[in-house]
Image (cartoon, rainbow, N blue to C red; front, side, top):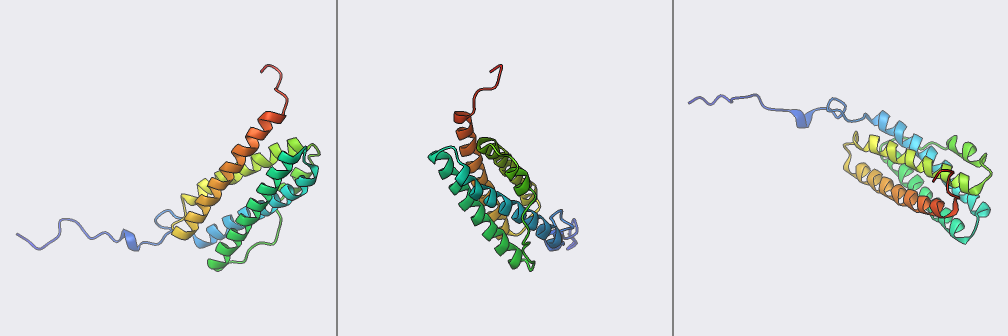
Length: 166
């Protein structure tokens, strides 16, 4: 018998994250700042929409969404700083597009589509994040957005007239 190994030692655990298919620090920081700008826009839209709400239920939902968006802005800023980056101070273009919608129910529908965009971005990003703490925060953010999407969709189903042909 020989002491020679049948196959070479695998050094995969020591490989660079990018080599292993994970996002680079710069890619992660860019994605986090893009999400931060989107969350800031969503928070501002929700805050402005409280005053335009069609009733107490709608206003309460906007306050919940605004608080949630602000919470995720804080988390994203904290993670960006932890990774050695600088949090963006910009507000995403989503804000202007949403505020151009004068009907508060249609603005909520647009906001809900924006929340769904964030969930898709988070799904793409979390697959490429190796950092356990960041990954956990991003999962919690996605889960929270899904709750908001479902809540808004249920509200929209109750207040919107049925489409022709339904």
